[in-house]
Length: 357
Ligand SMILES: *Cc1c(COP(=O)(O)O)cnc(C)c1O
Image (cartoon, rainbow, N blue to C red; front, top):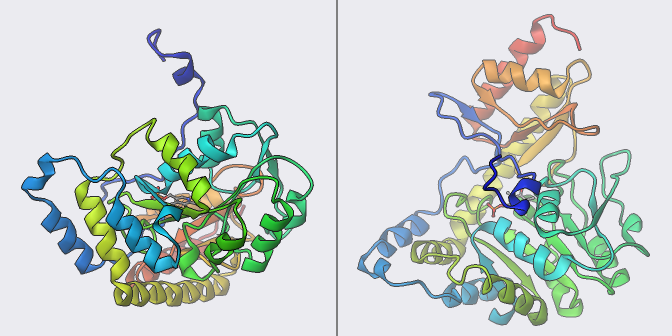
């Protein structure tokens, strides 16, 4: 803190991302990155974009990328908005749609960036508790509050709602914008995109960071009614007209077009997730049913803190969150088979050593 800070800077409580340490031999299962590289075609497209043309500003509307995404999802390009990672897209959605006279609703256990945006943008909000099994209950969002943001599958639980449940939410709450953050949808949940046609209050946000293995490129997008997209564009053009550089636009187009690679890598991750879930259950863990590229698990004899510290000592990094309902759990990214063997090996060694809760 310094006397030069604005009142805004003083009042912030920034999001703390999972660490990115440089430890040799580290098994990094803490930030839900893909164990596989991006599509080779995407890498090639980024390479080709690293050319003399970088002296020119990129297309501010990312037209080709928006057309590619529109094609892929069966919507019109006017229903697609792209940004520098879905974090940026979400921030614009908070400013353009979710800040309403009545408080924004989101689950008490969810992506911890949501309260951070609320603080930055002055969005009044209320959290809605998950049920006893860490599930979102749609009924709790009806007949109250203003706008709604829900991650589906939810983070960090991995638990998904069905499309029918989302449909019920957007129909019953047609009075308010509803944002569904589908960062992990490709790992086994149903996307709400087909509902957009009949529900002008629904905005679906996706990212290329997880299922397309492009966290380093920073590309996210939103799909919704043209009027919602127009609101996002107004905010974007009041903030940064060129959020996506030429390499990002080119790489994202190629990644979306490489369907074969996408299907192959995401199904490998789903297979590894099931394997990991079985291995953890065998070690005595309770594992929440995950539709994501991570699992959220707890052990009856050890705190989440103790488990993550023990793993760290064995050069395996997982994510632990403090807070009333989550501190018993650890969140483990679904890695490669070799990484998951290292994880289960380290857990087996720790659980065999005497150190009760
Ligand atoms: C990872 C993640 C995002 C953001 O990803 P970007 O890399 O900014 O696209 C958004 N929402 C949730 C729930 C996430 O886990």
